[in-house]
Image 1 (cartoon, rainbow over the protein chains, first blue to last red):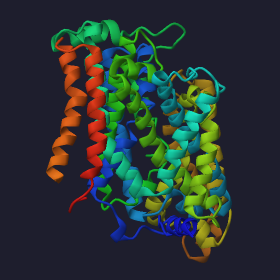
Image 2 (tube, one colour; image 1 turned 30 degrees about the vertical axis):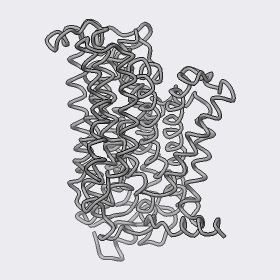
Image 3 (cartoon, rainbow over the protein chains, first blue to last red; image 1 turned 180 degrees about the horizontal axis):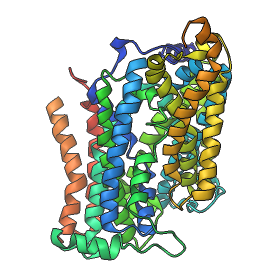
Length: 465
Length: 58
């Protein structure tokens, strides 16, 4: 009886997967600030900050590059993602189905679930590396591909299970949990960095810049690493979350915003998580003499509080990502409830996170993810904003009662192939992320041209030339 | 009561960050800073859910 009650309660959680979010269900600005601030302070910030140190970024290039990249990311979130999300109040998954039909949407959703699962799995794996230090569990290094023992597997299963349960309980629970960790998390990064400054020779604010240039961001890459410039840093900061902003996956979250201007709330998360935290974790890496393992650098500077920060930082990012994956899986398996599809994805993610290699390949995977998502974002953006103005039919698959809109499928494939060719022939090491920009533009142009061709039959009937 | 929880919570945040600055000024050592940061963390997470997100604007 009790079990039946729980299932009934879970069934009753309404997340508007296949309908617009009603006005009365929209959320306040405070709710958004809490969510996005937590979302962009992930366990992986402890990986990315040291990466800039290892790639020989100079102090000036880092500080300026992060400023440029994060401003561009904030503008992308606001003027592309949030604006469209508030206009349509639909998830990208359901919206895409109306534009391209069930079959291409299904393919995109399968790819998305896999990509979401990979990202969430890496968050869980980073969190799990932190647990091993004080409890003396045999934890793998980030270069390991296979699990090192039963201790690691149990840790991953426990962390993954908690994250899955919280994601199942819906957006309110996710926002609430992020809210509790938001004010505390940035302080842990700040405190850790400040505490190790004397070890690096910083004795006053006046000599910070000198130490930063000589001992932290020296401009000299580690052996075997390529050198990153200001433009690498800016491109990475802007486009590391391509799938979320110009790829429009964050419409799942921003469709709950009362106003599209709430997109500017992303700046809170970005400048804390993708600026301050990357700077702080770079300092921690330098103080740990070049060690880049998240758990180690956090534990060295903050003790158990640092270890908890790595776990919770992974957790607060993994939660919204798993939530999105659950929504994507719901489109693939429409007969099941969202909580059931989220639970299924949770199981897949736990299985992936057991293999610590998911973290090693995170950067390559994020770049691939950006390439997959950018043209799809362009298709939806053009469909909503440009098509009504130039006489083309929006939501064409729904209009023509088709299950396969070839214009979208060909656009997606063409954009992906052209960007790969660009990368093979003109690619500059470390600039893989920047391909999302030509990917978006090629996707937009191709979709307009192909839609003009594929819609011609219906346009003639409708009397549109 | 809510005010009291808030005071405890902000004390928790203070304990998390202030000792780091005392390490910077050589008033505390790293071990003391780590212990105080842990105490601050516990204090924050025990008391914050008792008031954060509750009330008329929640």
